[in-house]
Length: 155
Image (cartoon, rainbow, N blue to C red; front, side, top):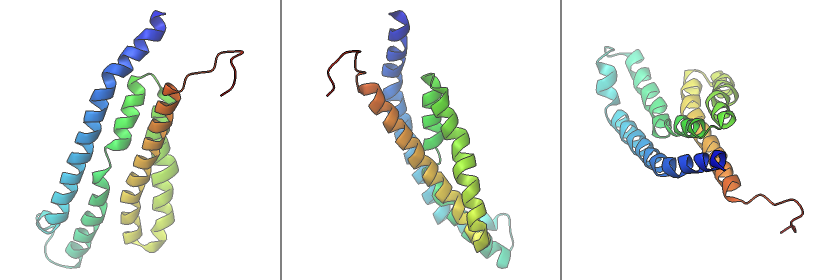
């Protein structure tokens, strides 16, 4: 009995913390994205002199910054799964999003030149975020759906 109760208590304690962390991650990500979009010129100007490289760098920084809005969601969900002892879900999110999403996107869009590579980065973050959210919703749905007892009538 105790072995069943402990994970339930851990999840009850972690849920509010997770929801707060999710909101904080999204809020912080959006704020950082907005700041970088607004201040891309002076930020790049601190490192590069005027010229074509600077203009390209400003474009790159603005494109890549779009992914910052959702970049914290996948690691947060991965950590949540890890805290609940669901190592497979955590592994799928952390390694799977890199190997199955981000690297293939960079390779696929590299044919479009540097801009394609820059675009692949925020798109990869968005896809990883959506994938992590889908895994989280599926896990929460499974946790709330009672397992049918042997011999029970199907619903």
